[in-house]
Length: 131
Picture (cartoon, rainbow, N blue to C red):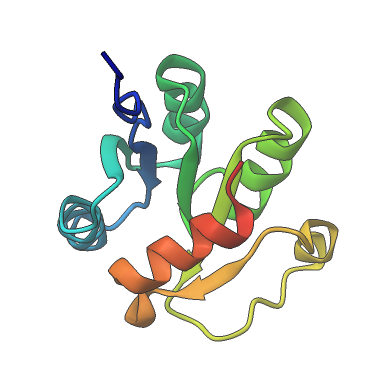
């Protein structure tokens, strides 16, 4: 008797969204839910909440708003790069360019516009920057 190939044991990409705007968090959830192979595991409304959620939830990918009150996304990305170098972090902004001096330290972190965020972009970001 010949056995066939083993079933695939791939798991979904676990995504955390960190954004102070509830509307974008809803949009991100809808996009992630509509994208096969991705799973929304949590949301955070501030940079501090995002840092805590990363420790608690161990996501594979963090979608991180640039401009938030308190700890901004650039600083959160910097801290995440230091603590979790294998974590895929994507900065998201409504703006096309970010003129923040510390952003230059994050040249390996992609920046995408919220207006362009969708399933195709999510898959491409993971293919280009995921583990």
